[in-house]
Length: 390
Ligand code: AMP
Ligand code: MG
Image: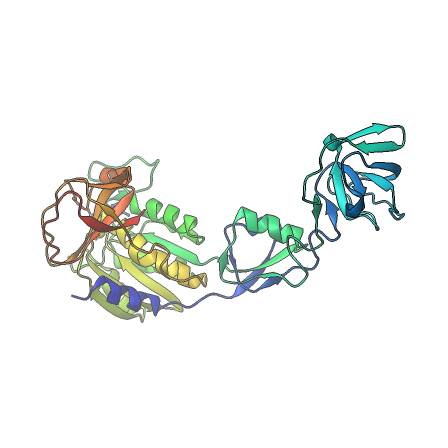
């Protein structure tokens, strides 16, 4: 048996970052920046008023000082002239500060009579002017890899970047195997169940920025599996679910071998989990996941998400392990690393008693996986344990 970290390294070695593509700005959120993008302008592009008020010379600002209003500057419409001694320009937020002025007295500090204003309150120390380039300057850049947020989109828009170079989304083919499986919405026969992992993995992959494709369920025949694998061709990553161990009906190993896959089995020392299968098949990375629903989902978090992140050019591990205190005692762990379903409530870890790897309801109730190293001794309430948010 190999450790989880060795297995992960072997899986990561199967993939490398994808090429990039250009998308319109509106499609950039949630994508990973592939090349630096550079501001094409200063923001603001001119010294701009931060308030509604009067633009004057700072040296003349004092209580009871009077000014003659000689014009107006509004957002989008600057004042062409110059502010001289004893002069003011009516100004609004976002307007360019006229030449000669270096202070905006806010309108609340002024009384106006015709074209004359008087400062009637002690003006604040700040100039109420946003300096040119105070937000960002020409040449300022965002650097890859960067998972683009809505705020990044706003920033790139302000920088006048209409097209954004991002990593291509990894395409992932998902193949469920098993005569017992039907799709959600179908009517199962008496011996059948609904394929669930496929849909959980699909959601996990989408949230991670991949484009999964759910292929038709492959029944437990060589032909059905071969057909599904043919349909998967061209995907960056092919994932089979189930049929990956050594039972009579477990065909994935044999069929992929016939198709020329250089395959490795990793008996991974983890719970839940089973032997994983991985290799390259017709130009795609391929991973065979265990069929047990919770095993498949946990392997999705622990192995598949880091592969997707690497394909996207991101550091593979997003979820650095965190720690929190246990809310109660737990027994000792066995010889395999154990990913235990648990809830983090008010900063304390509540580990579910039932860790049966076929039970999705408990996975759905969990918001973290508590990670127990192999042979971890019994732990008491208050002990700090490591966990991964899920
Ligand atoms: P297998 O690895 O094919 O022996 O499957 C192990 C267990 O997982 C069996 O109980 C299967 O019925 C179940 N299983 C396999 N694939 C899926 C799937 N896509 N959705 C839900 N259960 C599955
Ligand atoms: Mg099966």
